[in-house]
Image (tube, rainbow, N blue to C red; front, side, top):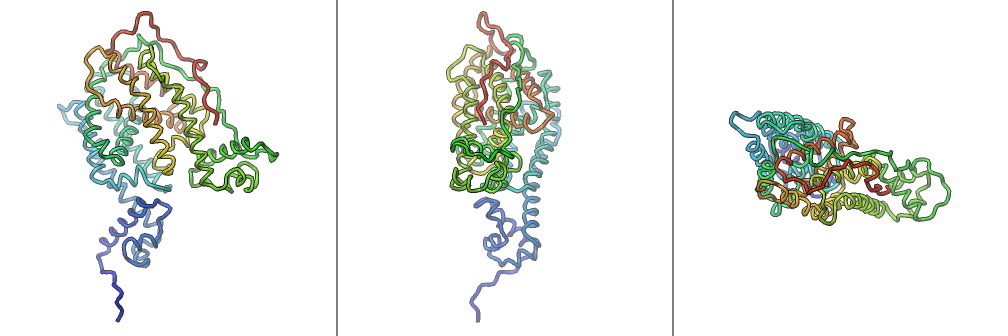
Amino acid sequence: MSSRRRTPRLAPEVRRRELLDAALDVILDRGFDALTVEAVARRAGVTRPVVYDLFGDLDALLLALIDREEAAALDPLLGIVGTHPGTGVTPEAFLVDAVGQFLGAVRARPRTWRFLLAPPRGASNELNTRIDRSRATVTGLVEALIDWGVDARGGPPGLDHGVLARLLVAAGEDAARLTLLHPRRFPAGRITALAASGSLLIGVETSVRHLGPAPSVSIRGPLEQEAVGAPRARMAKSQRRVQILDAAVGLIAENGFEALTMEAIARRVGVNRAVVYRSFANLEILMLAMLRRLDAAVRDTFDAALPAEPSDRHPVRVLGEALATLLEAAMQAPDTWRVALMRPERAPRALQTLVNRRRAALAKRLRPLMASALESLADPAPEMDVDLAARLLLSTGEEQARLALEDPAFPTDRLIEASWTFLSALLPRTTQPPDGYEGATLTSTDLPEPPSS
């Protein structure tokens, strides 16, 4: 008699749930690339025919998993932002409550939100499409809430609600990742406290009379050169490496990381694979060199934008000029910035790690500036979590660069004006600028040259 244990019979709906849980385990542990029928069957303790009987094939299994996790995340989110606030609810109270409910939903299903916002490796085109669609739905509802909130509190006027909604959604996603990946350092209470104190800083009027007009950006045209059809002539090794890295960035910007192969790079450069291998021993080494180069370009831009020492300029002016510098750099090296600012759910773990390290370093640069801005308030400022605020401020800056690169509806001048108007809502509470200060318009000649791609 065989001693082999038989898989117990379960109702089909129970077995389906078990297999979907197993598929989610595989993805969260090892990435999308590791998802196979064999891996799911082994994790669930069944044979492969059981998986095929219930789902047909791997694509159908993944689609069912995406359906389930999308609904698990989106349904409570729509319940939070899709319901009009009741009478007697202030916009400030609604904001704090909504942030708390959202983070509570994230904590209730951490595996779902990791799957959507911070997968370990690989990606699914279908999942990316769903995330983009859900993000657009939520953004539209948030914009409607901003309409209600500004009207209910009587201002501030002139805000670009479309831009502001996208920045709030980006900050919310980053806050969710922080509490998912670092729950002790970024508990939900810390984030909701920032929402409460931040809402108190917004006035009901706007005024830029003390600081002059908004900074401006003059785009001189992309600096990046197309690598397709490059001449086959011999090059210095350092020059060839730059050409190969440019080609890799272009491939990823157009088609994602899954398009990156040594063959595709060679074809884009116009050489055979041996030339690429002479510069980089394998694809992993090439990708690491490319990511480090991207990170250096972004760091250089932020270093130029953010003062290392306190400035005699108004902090709001400094922030506006920093955004102008960032947007000009992004538009002049679009492929570089599309890859460097790729959304975390589409980026490999190595890029996510570099981005998190960069944000931590840049947040330190922002702290003195934000502390100075709080000190400039004429009224006593509410206690503010400057560290967390700096981190989320960086997230909104990165989101504005993405919008400028990806959506023609958000040109740089609209983004600059929207941010300047929002920042100016703080000015009715600020002290007068130093004697003799006059805000000046920032022109393209005032901006540093963006880093070469």
